[in-house]
Image 1 (cartoon, rainbow, N blue to C red):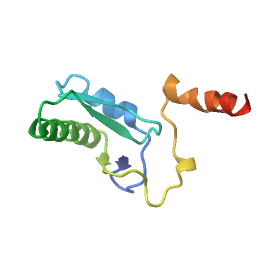
Image 2: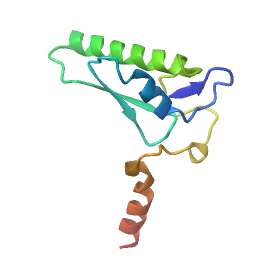
Image 3: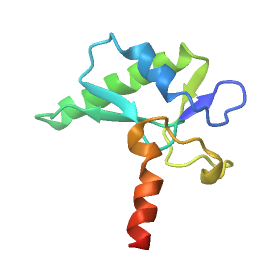
Image 4: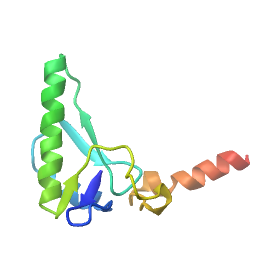
Length: 109
């Protein structure tokens, strides 16, 4: 989760974090999640637990560096303790913008 370094409130800045780490070679990728204050870490396929651990550490370090460059901090959490999910901005990607409409169509079919 991306947090404002001063307030520790969720910061909808995943696009800035992704842009800040684009040139860095990684053992996987950082990408958007549903909420714009969440960055997802995906390792490449690993052949051992040690390789997986090293990959996760490298991805976390890249995310942390990119976040700090943007006045943010990283928190490993599934949900923010004081912010309602409904108050969190959705990532500005086609996948997540169209999701509510697709779910509504499915529910009403």
